[in-house]
Image (cartoon, each protein chain N blue to C red):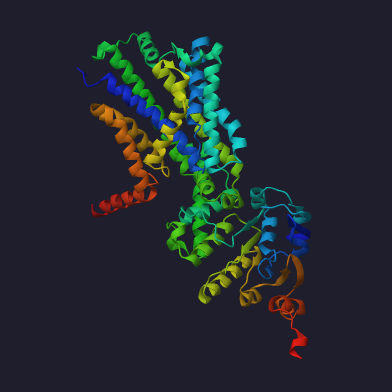
Amino acid sequence: MVLEIQNVSKNFGGIHALKDVSFSIKEGEIYGLIGPNGAGKTTMFNLITNIFEPSSGEIIFNNEAITGIKSHKITEKGICRTYQNIRLFSQMSALKNVMVGGHSRTSSGVFGSVFRTKAQKKEETLLTQKAEELLELVGLIEHKDTIAENLAYGQQRRLEIARALASNPKLLLLDEPAAGMNEKETDSLYDLIKMIQSKGITVLIIEHDMPLVMKLCDRITVLNFGEKLAEGTPTEIQNNEAVIEAYLGKEEEEEIA
Amino acid sequence: MFDFINPYYLQIGSFVLINILLAISVYVPLSSGQLSLGSAGFMAIGAYTSALLTINFDIPLVFGIIAGACVAGILGIIIGIPSLRLTGVFLAIATLGLGEVIRVIFVNWESLTKGSIGLTGVPQIGRELLNFVRGFGFEPSSIGLKNNQFVFLMVFLLLLIIVIATIWFVARQQNSRVGRSFSSIQMDEKAAESMGVNITYYKVLAFAQGAFIAGLAGALFAHVMGYISPSDFAYHKAVEVLIYTVFGGSEVIIGSIFGAIFLTLMPEVLRFISEYRYIIYGILLVILMAVRPQGLIDIHLLSRFKRVKRSKGGVR
């Protein structure tokens, strides 16, 4: 198992954002996290990357408890994420954004930076190369010098993915990557995520675009009001009574009769 | 011969250079998103440390100045860590308060600092340099310079070297992994952290570097003037230094440098209308803030400038 979520709960004051949620993700799979708005999906991401600490429960990554470890250390261990509301470094070029993503895989400090030591130069060349490859992968290589905020919306989403990939993650967390994309963009996003999977990276994805989720994911967990409603393959989820109820509402039989 | 080497101009030039250092000391923390108004305080620490060491213990000037900068830098680390919880205006107010606290300590610790009267007889760089070259049997008159011309010229050149080295350091750092981390924190702290940037380390690093540079500027100031008092490092100094950076443009280091040069020279150039010069100074600032709140020089201006240069190169 790459990631194991064990009985995780999170309370904000009196509000239970997550209640006793457990699931685990196998290596190399694309795992979906779906549910109505406010179900606690993004909270789960924030717990995994330790923006918040869980109120109770454990999060295990590669057989190691990562609960309570600082965010930047978690990135070093191999988990990286994107954000639902894009959070690029808006005044930096696309290339530099991706290079910041490679921060945890590089090491030169003040001395190396100022005196341009051999190791620093080599590292910088390799990092630039890798960043360019990633921009190529997400189809943004011709925009590498464009300032991030001047990119189109769909391009910004793809740049965020490239930036996250620069940290060499074993597990990539995507928070609604298809939000605001048109059909064509969504299709190319599908290809991109499949390609990421083929590189041996495990993907955990939050998404509202159901056709995409059903096509993409190997397994899915459904959250509703902070609780786990169901888990299974896309087919199982589509036929699950409780899920249909949560999404479409319960049929009021008396009224019909 | 060499009459154009005018001590008055050289003195102003030296002040310009010290002010450039101070502007950079604001720029560096700001490049990581921290607005620090502690420059005057750190400057005071650097000045008093170096002055007291050289007066009381006869330490060579070089070591005094380095010690002054280092003490300010270390204080920067000590202050930087708790200040991490503060951002924006709150950090600005806290650091401004810090500067005042330092000043008040220097005013009241009379046994050490002679209070508000200040320290006199601080060894001067110029004289030390003159004695130094005389030790080799060199006389300024042998190259047609008067003694005081030589002194002011040497001070100016020494400061110029230090300033160039500092700019070189900061510019190189800016265009590297460390500089990218600074700007990523400035643009989005949370995103930077989730990209693996240790924001605690880099914020304290930037803050301490700013403190170090301000301390260096303060130590140099003490040994250029030969006299320091707490009022040299009062609240208005902190604001003045901030204005250099804000006026010139806080996004790029050239902005800070330009601001320091322009705003130090302007009151001198306008000396012939001495009564009105600070009015003009004030009006200029108001107009600038209304028209160009990001400062005179910003990234877009620089990139346009670069493009023009490149297209000219293409024609050739």
